[in-house]
Every structure is written in structure tokens, then in C-alpha cells.
Image (cartoon, rainbow, N blue to C red; front, side, top):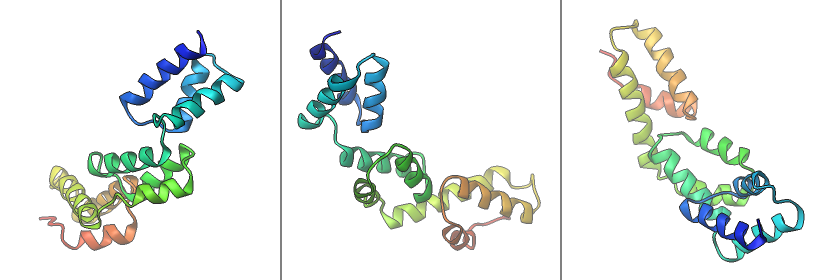
Length: 153
């Protein structure tokens, strides 16, 4: 595979959806492209705006908190795992609307309780809903605030 073929393949890969530098590097390594070629291709992708870490962080945050209903902690940890720079993480986290975030947590907890009502006594269900929300990346303080407005009956 020539360098131009690899570049074209990676341009399609990045055009399909936003990618982080780590994903592109992994893809290039899987195509057996190493060293200077790898760095040159990444540089060209950045130059041609196929690869943009800030744009990636922003779209990642939007998708995870709106569609998957993830909390800030889980999103933050996942961005760190992808080796996104602290600057880009900070920019990405600005995509979270506080009111929508609170509504997401409420609907997540309310749905969980509704689906499990009657199966567990209230104290056990309360513990389970807290645990579920925490695994989704929400802070205990946020969960506790919303817990007051959840109907367990």
C-alpha cells in the first residue's frame, strides 16, 4: 500500500465519523504503516481538517450525554482513556447543558425505578437506583438531589 492509498483510506475513515488521534494511530498500525509514514499521514489529516481533537471531544460529549445519558464522570474518564488533551476535554465538556443534564439524570432514575417497582422493597430499590446512576457517571450529590423527586410508590 502506498502512502497516498493509505492517506485516502484514512480520509474516508475520518470522514465517516469524528476520530481521535489514538483511533487513527491504531488504524494506521493495523494497516502496517509505521514510523515517518504514520506521522506524515496524521499530520496531513490534521492539516486537511479530517482530524480535529477538539471537534472530536465536543461531538463525543454531545453524543454520550444526549443519547447514552452518561454523566460527567464517565464521559471525562472515557476522554482521558482516549488520550484527549485537557484543553480539548475542557472544551468538550462545555457542550453539556446543565438543565438537560439534570433532566437526563431524572429520566434515567425514574425509568429505572418504574421498571423495577414492586420487585424490591423501597430501601433496596433506592440503593439500586443510586448504584445504577453512579455507574452511568453521575455524582452522588446530583443523584441525591434527584432522588427526592422520584416517586417510589
